[in-house]
Length: 280
Image (cartoon, rainbow, N blue to C red; front, side):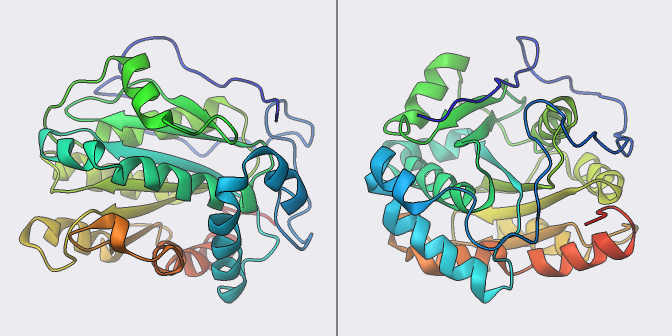
């Protein structure tokens, strides 16, 4: 089993009105938690043999994610994968039918290609954000239900900004040296659109990429705001993407999901390097 430094915030919900994020100072090469890595090194972060021994059920997902990364020219790239999960009332059926748990497994398999610590921080949100929880490879069966119990999550509304602040705080406080690739899942429009746009602009100078993922049809009326985010103005880098799964998330093939999740990421990496947000 992989060992990791637990990177958790103080108990309680993420603050509703956190200060605007500032560009963090460059981390020292031996920062505890996530040491600096050679991004030019080819291949996945976690070896297939090790994954097969610890989490054989994730092997097919791991391979599918690896193929998509290579297609996008991302082989050997490293990133800290985050998973943000909508816990609004309209999501209840998608928790019951296993769609959210499946996404957690797909996210872990992607992370195994990008990050060697064997875990993904998971943030649940509704009108507020719950404390980030680490989900581990090898302990992932039923992990979403366990996270819900651990944080006492209740169904509520849909405000993205508290979850975005929670991710930014976690990434800053854990001493990460790799960029954050944030899978931000939701099934509907935000109640706090103005705050979301402000945070998107402010975080465009940080090494954080927001990949919004809609559970539902791409052209649905409630995804109009999400579709607009990749083209939002006033940003230093194109730090957001959007894709959707269709009405039944579990019916979307794994390789198709990974291709959609990664489609906008290479352009952000290039722009972030050009702007000095990334230095590798």
